Length: 238
Ligand SMILES: [Ca+2]
Ligand SMILES: [Ca+2]
Image 1 (cartoon, rainbow, N blue to C red):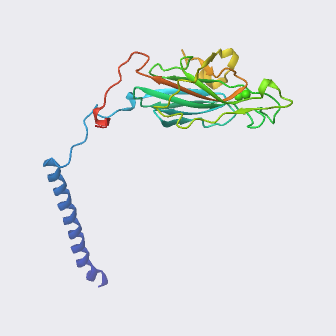
Image 2: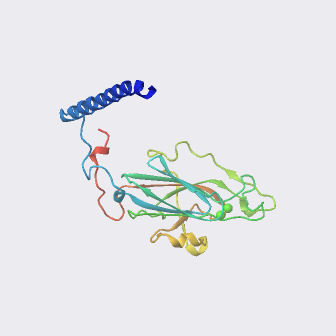
Image 3: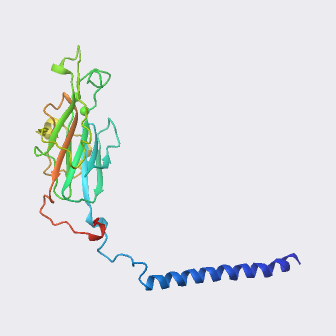
């Protein structure tokens, strides 16, 4: 008895809901046909994963990396063990890469492992478009010490990190050229050998041991491997 009483209103409600859905769908379809709503972009108009480049980065001990002013990769391990960060990048040229790299060093003594020793740094990067680290990069040491390797009475130099140092239009003309270091001097750990770094050089500021925080910058005008990047007008801002 109770069921019967509710059956009719329920049917009416259901029919009402169905009518609303049909009317909505029909008007949406008509609006699309009338050109009011543009259709989805065709194949090739939007970038696919094949249009990205793989970026491999190894830092002793840590890095944070910006491309065209935007944060793209951060080392997930602050100190030990040494690792490789490998990410997909959708490159846009000219491409400015800016990196802050840190050797593990106490801010006051510039030493590590409870102030028992001086640690060394090292940074290397390779991108699938042929971009590699080398002495053509710019470098700025912002934390140096212990001065004169004096570990008994450690003194350090901290330099203020310039504002907007990672921005595309930042003027790095007074930065020094990055210095290259041999693989056997940096002695990278196992993960380094499990990724493609062929053709890339380890870089740092002048002193691999006493420069503890280093900023790097480079501007890549076009893919170094000579390839022509696909254009996506859909993504260009008019
Ligand atoms: Ca050091
Ligand atoms: Ca180190």
